[in-house]
Image (cartoon, rainbow, N blue to C red; front, side, top):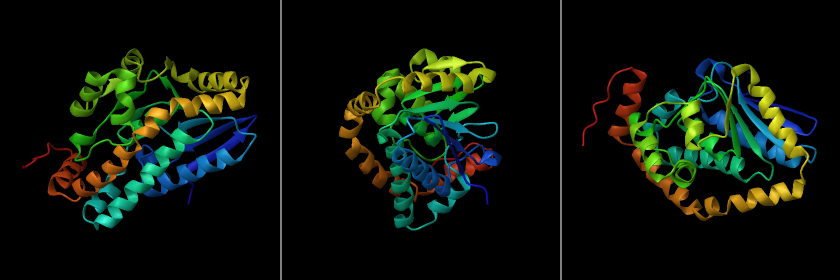
Length: 259
């Protein structure tokens, strides 16, 4: 079986590629665990100075794996909690690794994929990239960095719009909001990400690590809100409402939410 995350390193750069292209790199539990492990490996290798996170195939990451999430809605609460704890550990690994992580995004970057994107230090996007949160549309809610960090990127009102309405935004729209750093043509994406990474390589590695830690202070202070979110989502994913949202999305119909 192919690895769900491809690990490559050369000349101080580490390339991590989400590798489930047949499902637009949807986040199943194995990918979550593999990305966490790959980041830990990159942290341990002193020659690695910058990580570039990519997606295989036509998309960067379409969010949570719907089939797996539907199974979790019928599973014991302890299984949902364990999955969410693993997801939190993955986001923490992106955010807290001492080395900068640059997201090189093409195609869709939605839901849990966008939560990873927000956790990355910087984002370079292709003109064909599209960004969104999908939680309330599919019986879920973002909790790993969207409530904590997206308001600082785009403003609180815009963050609520993104979260509540679940609209899709173009790369240019995301750039104009401060959601991402730069948009380039599809054939320039890898070169531009490499260019930014190489600029970082010329800087003091200790200073970069300290700068990242200082930027993370507020996120670290809000960690209890994420831990509370694990418990809230553990409960919510066990409800008929969440199950209906996921089933409706799978069946390509409007959900019938009942209160």
